[in-house]
Length: 68
Image (tube, rainbow, N blue to C red; front, side):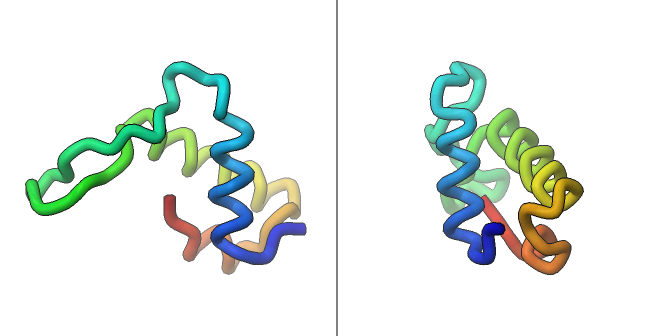
């Protein structure tokens, strides 16, 4: 069972390491003040976290606070 945000992020990147549609590349955010991951990566991360929570791999509380 994963208990930290860091573990979830590591598991996500390992799971999608060979997926060409999911990139670690960052783009300029909507305000133009920083960087964010692409929409594909963010959507995949949300689905990944939801699946982990449903399967009982992470707690609901961790699922609510983990960010990419």
